[in-house]
Length: 162
Image (tube, rainbow, N blue to C red; front, top):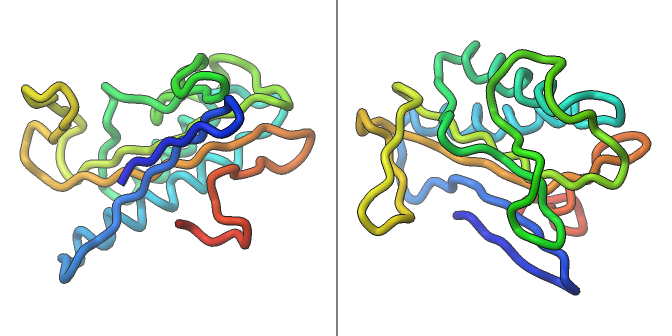
């Protein structure tokens, strides 16, 4: 489920893979690793760090659990437009890209696959599937860079996920 909203001229973007009915242990592990990789990444969503510090943390966590990361789609800045600069890949070496500054808002969105990272877009121009037909999961929140801790903008007021 991927949801965007525009309130008073500003956008928010969030997504989650939600299991329906009985799912395999592999699917449950994939969903949890995908979700946790977001939280591993935002540990580096701090003033003075660089975009790729977030990317590297996500990649390190995901690959340590035996999964791969989609490389054709990335996170992004979010604000007056749903998709803004900078791009926020979910892979890469640390210490590269834009330096994070207070006031920046980023949609950080790991997309994790059981098999290869390769994906294909279907003829409807929207639906994306893994090329090898294996499972994939997605987790995303809009995050504000502050003077201190990153602030997740797309969690419910009490801190719970939607």
